[in-house]
Length: 389
Ligand SMILES: Cc1ncc(COP(=O)(O)O)c(C=O)c1O
Image (cartoon, rainbow, N blue to C red; front, side, top):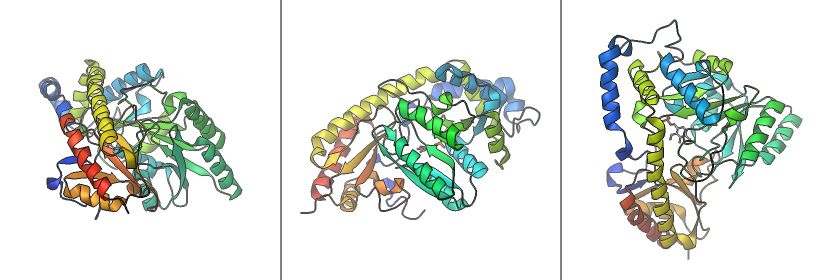
């Protein structure tokens, strides 16, 4: 991990680096109350390992799986039940199980460029070949994927799996259009590849119309969706899930190699969902993130706009900043750090380190709303000073 955090976090006043939820949104009172209630009513099961007979170890606590399936059905218009849900330690374990279950040495996997690095890292470890599909403001260029599929075929290869953050992509914050979603699902069926849909930011929409999940469009069973309470509620819960065809879910469970999720926290979250607390909480946090985005965009216009371009996201935590070629981004990052501002370097989001050098990812989620403008002003100063003359 050397070079991953190239600064001491103590020196950072404005951390635009990581996609962390704002800690002031954590629903501490409800979590305290429900945690105590579970211990009062159900301690023997809550503090025990899961039971074998109902898949409590391999798949997670049945009650929460059921509540998650019900919520997915209400949100997405699907008809899944608990057999389609496996609980995981955050979305990241769902991704890692998906890779371990379906990716072998020499397999070809596709990702968006840019993307979050977990699948790139897994492919590297497992010896899989990665192809990158470019994105534009409407998400993955599915037309280009089609060309890549034909090229693979003429090379005697086939695509095994595709990973997409179709809604509020990390790092761009942009989403795949509904038409492209439909086409991608058709292509998966036609060419027989799996689709791992990372939807950990999907509920954080504060503008525009909800887009259908790929999973809800799929009839073939090839699409499975990674979800999590980390971004909407609290990453410390370490509770996520995969929603897929029961056979896909069984394949993921068979490679998990742990003893399942916390029975206590799973029961707590079951109650949180059954009391109907999640969706009002999400509506509330989305108001906050919308105001943070608006303040960040205004500040970028005021302090950075001559040398920076961005597209405004309709949800999520990120702004993806493209700096003018006249700007030395490395120098900007150093100067910004000296001023107490951290942003994530763009090249972290590409398989090929030469790509993304003119980009910075700015996460506006965690910095207090009243601090955002001052931080972006410092960044703007660093950009102005970082121009090659
Ligand atoms: C795109 C994406 N997927 C998955 C995760 C994993 O989140 P968690 O494991 O906390 O659910 C993250 C976290 O930053 C992310 O950005």
